[in-house]
Length: 412
Image (cartoon, rainbow, N blue to C red; front, side, top):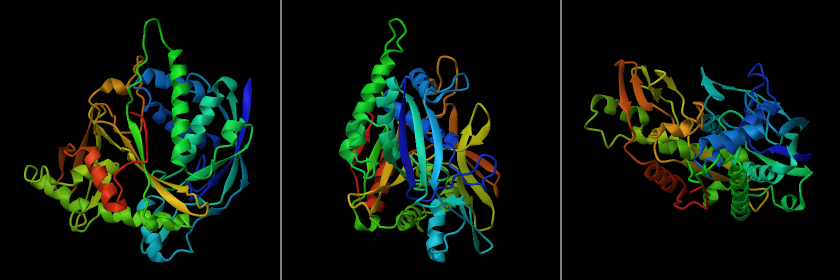
């Protein structure tokens, strides 16, 4: 028996979502939505258990794998949407500000901005889920969390592709009566506890013989909410602009730009071993691209020792726009994903019994290290972060947002 759950998804920030065959196409497809749902489901499970086999089984059960179809079916239907290729209502300085957190989607070439087509804010879609009744409470609890944490499309960790899910039909009264539009930490915390209980009950059914399921977490998510008035805006684009200014100013402070610190590290490695801030900036994701005054380029990236190749590393710091108590006011959440190390010290966390490599899109990457490469010197050196993630992100939050304590923590 299946439950039919219907929602209206409305974008509250522009979404850079490519089509199936061409990035110039813009469409919200079931595959894109399922990919985002799978990502957040996997990550939230990692706040509950460190048993990778159990995580894989529950994810596979709901969303499928190459071996089996998922139990959850998704249908996407357009209600009203608008595709745009410009931000003509913005001045050049405002567009320049947005281009920092919109890098790759907003590019400046020969004095002109090239903007990838996007779904404009206000675009609406009807989302229909068919969910087995035995998973209904678990899935709807997860959807409520996803509604305030998730996003869709390119640069989604920097505030793009944020949305609101509004129930249309099929939900039980207890879920229907929740406020799905306005962020509130109390119901979010309560629903997370309910989600945790449902997950634990399901995982208990996966026991084999005397096997016990560990409920130690792989990581935790901490949610911070800036209280300063400058981060409360009636226009979500204006909020993204303020976030971009603040983020750029912190990362590219004129006293300690990435490029200067990186070059100092390569030339005077021991001298700058503990001063070089480029160590810390790896916490905002990799690669970091560098251009020197002489025009040469360099970069910092994650190098996988086994595969002998460089790969990207997603940032564990997420900007999310939500609606406040004043429904016409947008405000940001800063969500951090915290695990113990930059590079995993226990490779079994990323493998299961059948030696499947599971990508967690975080910092638990087996047999990898962070390396830097400069073109002008043709030198490659290994860089290991000397500063704990906790300390660096704490400094970032204090300097930019004047906040120290999360309003909510998901996981142990």
